[in-house]
Length: 524
Image (cartoon, rainbow, N blue to C red; front, side, top):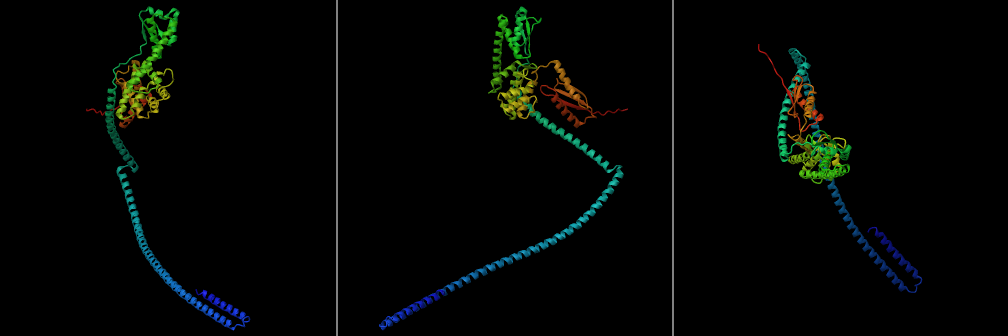
């Protein structure tokens, strides 16, 4: 407001000047009227006075406002100064507190540094004392070692070797003893469990059939029938052999003809056809072809029925029709006198019981076991082991990978990788190896015993070996100087492994190593 005061004065002066100029300008024109001039002057004086009064009032208002603003400014200045001073005091207090803390930390660090230096000096002294003590102990040990060598008459290295040898022998004996204890415990538990599972499986799948041999002899009503079968210049017999693929052996055997063929299905077709021809009496090439065709149809139907019956007995559903037919072909196949289809059904029952006892997949186990010998139905037509042939057939006809693997691994053509594969092996061995299931020839039996003894005798340290219990066990007498107790255990495992790799046999073979030491003295 102080800044407006000069401007107000200038305005007032300007107004007064304007009035004066106006009065002066009109003086000449209005000389005639003095009264008007006086009134004009009075009016001008009044206006000037009024203007001066207004100016003074405005000046007083401005001064009052300026005083008020000045007082407000002073109050704000005092307030800000108080706040600044309070903040300064707080900052100064905080700085002083930080300085005290830093000073305390420095004092603590100085004390710790002093303690550390003191500890280092103490450790240095102790290290020096320890080095001196170690030197003294080393000297004492050296003197003691020399004295021991002098007393024992051997060097430290020699004594060390003797001590290590004794410790090694003790450890070996302890290991052998512990190994025997653990092995005995495991065998007891395993044997108990295995006997239980196998006994349950065998009891559930007990079979009453006896070993059978494929019959390939056709009875005749009389010997005159042989001539009719041969026909004029042998045309009938040639027609029969050509239509069936089977060789007819007509010898001096009374009232009988022998059929010879590798394929049992062909042999069965020829047998049925001959029986029909003999019963009908009309034997000529045209009739032979007609009868053989009917016999083939009957055999095909019979194989299908046998396959369906086997699948029903084994409780296996969803088999492909070709698998059913191949199963039926096994009814004409034997192994050591055991019918292969009945063997497959029996083994399937055993596998299902074992799988149920140990918690494996029952469906996979019984299906794979029923089909495990399916390759034997065509092994005379396809090259390769029957296990791999059967696995390929099962894979082609939609069986699961686990079933295919179990079939392929049941004779270790593939390494068994599943529980079900081991179950198929066990069921196959249990069905084929049980007493009375199979009939072996004397020649084959003797060869198997000789092969067992040859495998046992091929190992170093074996003095003699004996195959006993119809080839179910091989016992080896070893030289006690060449084979110790631990070596006897290793030898038993190695022989068992060699037998598994090189020989084929039903069931299992027990390997026993006998190591005998005798101490003999004579009293004179």
